[in-house]
Image 1 (cartoon, one colour):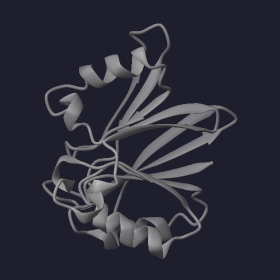
Image 2 (cartoon, helix red, strand yellow):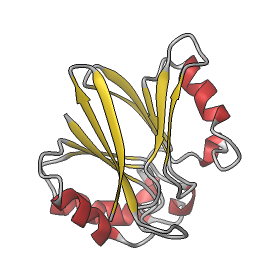
Image 3 (cartoon, rainbow, N blue to C red):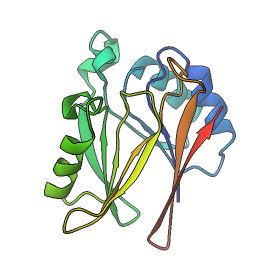
Length: 165
């Protein structure tokens, strides 16, 4: 199973379309906020992909933000996956608050955005280890490259990479 993960498009919806076009085998697409209107356009262009999205701190003025949630937990491929933008967990300071949340809630994989910087960590400091990922910014805002995440779950194994556009 392949999942494409985006965050922080900030008006650059075509980057998401380009990335999804390169992964026709993707079954899911997650959006981690700051560009909900962009993501709505992309969902319309790729109706066959299961989508989930959360709003970010810059989505407060978006027409779509009224119906969007700030975080959600999904059970996919035998894994408990948490989606958030990250600002409520103060990820720009440190991922620690998010990691404690994941440990308390038996999360297997957590995705966050907000920092515009790709990040990946296998957290083993708690009773149950888990993964924390940030795909960076698909909009390329304030970053050297536009980036997105690719998660594959095969036979219970988690494979993750960050790709550049």
